[in-house]
Length: 192
Image (cartoon, rainbow, N blue to C red; front, side, top):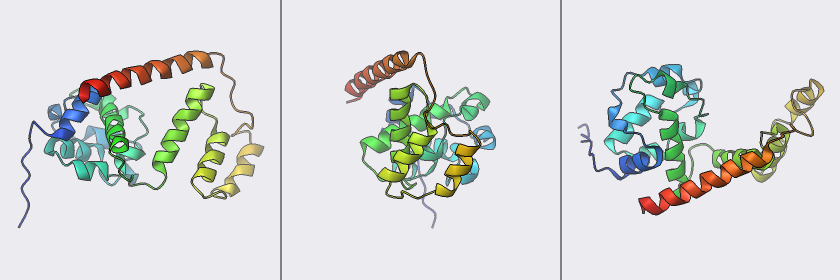
C-alpha cells in the first residue's frame, strides 16, 4: 500500500526555508526547468525539482539526507530558468544551513568540510586558492594523498598557482562576510 503524504502549509521545513531564503516553495509548479538546466543534476540523488516538491510535502528527513543540497554549486542556473522566479539556489543554501544546525551527517562524505574550508579561504583571501583548498581538504579529511597525481600536471601547466591570487579588495570582502554574519545572527534571533 502506498503512503499518502498531505502537504501542510505549517511544515517546520517550509517555515525555515521561507524565513532563511525568503522564497515560497509552494509557488513551484514542478515544471522541471531547474533540474533540466542544472550542471550537476547527473550526480544528485534528487534533482532540484524533487527537492522543491519534498519541501512542499514537508519531507524534512529526506531533504536533509539528500546529497543534492551539498552538491549544488550555487551557479544560479535553476533560479534564472525558473518561470515562477523562485531563487532555488537560495533555497538550497537555506537547506545547508538547516542541515548544519541540526548536526545531521551530510549524504556526501566530507562535503561539509569542503564547504567550510571553501568559505573560510574566500573570506580570508578574498578569492579562492585551489592549492590551499586541496591541501587543507586532504589533510583535514584524512586522505592526504587523494588526487596527488593531478597536482604536478596542474602546477606545471599553470592551472594552480602556488602562491594564490592577489586581491586588492580583500578587506572589503571581509567586511561583506562580517555583514553577512550579523544579518544571519539577526535572522536566527527572529526565527527562534
